[in-house]
Image 1: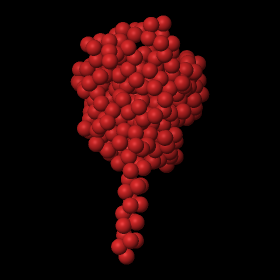
Image 2: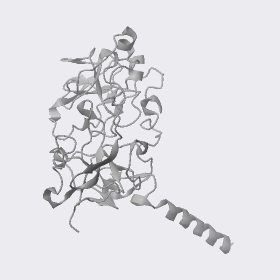
Image 3: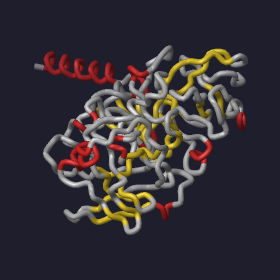
Image 4: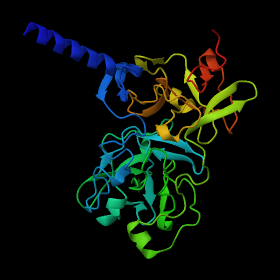
Length: 337
């Protein structure tokens, strides 16, 4: 009996050891203070809550039931897109939209029933404004069913069932009435090639304009050869990606919080299959203490720099002796030894 028990304990220890890998957990997320948050999916993996490969069309968001499922947005983020500039995303990187048939003054939501299946409602519960955005712009509207919907500058906020991964803007311009929301609540950009089909306008089930960031086929993270720095990681817009020396990989922690994020926006989660030329070691989503989801390479949190105005800029390189571009292996580029 003792021999069997010892063997069982040894087997259990081996399993635990095998699971304790990159970032202290395999295919997982890091939580506050870098302590393991339990089993979870890496960036881009299918998720049971509908945020993964199935998007809002799976897991109950837009499942065809006709019922609006108001999911909280958490910490909102002003995310950069190559096609639309800055758009508002939820804490998991999904784009928020506004509907022309709604109104902002007074706030009124008109997307109900089947429309709310295609365009899931965003709950106002616990929502926090993006860094640098006036908190007074956030509000709520009471829907016909009594639920509370998040508003931005008076406009009710929605997600789109056909956005299947963080960063998608497939809802942009649908029916000529749906638009990604800018951080100030205005339309992120006018749609191009939007259809005028009445069915699309009423339910929003058609897909026109926008597409999966149709302005560019660039990978979510890829490599650019800088004339001075060599190979460095860039995002889908070609903007340089940085690491902060005061962060740590394990335990996974961030030292860039609050006002720091205005200058150094986080890189939102990227599907592992949406990368080119970079290591996927430690390629996991960091669940930050402020609720924002952040992409990592080799378990190091990634950022862009607000001072970089165009693709190819490396104005963040060496700032404060703590910020440096990232190599395809996730290492600091040009940092003193």
